[in-house]
Image 1 (cartoon, one colour):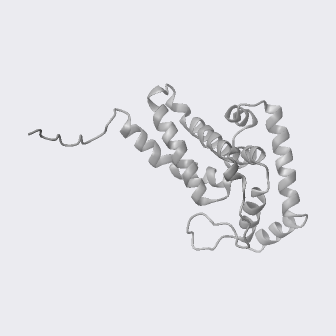
Image 2: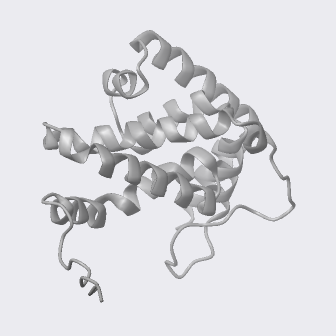
Length: 185
């Protein structure tokens, strides 16, 4: 009679602990970036999980762990763009309900935040990626270009076009509403 071996306990690879630590520190930030790109928390979770799996598989080959954040953001971005190319993901379901809000900070989310998130969905995916990397992740033009694999001129033109689309969606009175709301606090 053949005896079964007990499953191996502990880390299955020498880098598991290091990856788990990185995962714990950065998963929330990557998910927030994915949400800003796709506008749906469930889809953002899927993108983040796929991206972290890709990062885990590449982990042993990575020589510069000081540049992990940029590499992880690039994976999230490319995963999002690849998902947008799939025909079954292109179809958007429009609803009368506002988008989901992040976290539970005691408020139901500000009206301005919901308006901006809704307007961001109308921005084409590549322009949205530029806006998220430049203004949410606070990357420079050069860093954004490196993450997207394009020229700095492309980043500048895409951010200009994306901001124009965002402003059109928000309407001419949004800045007045925002200034009034901020002054009243």
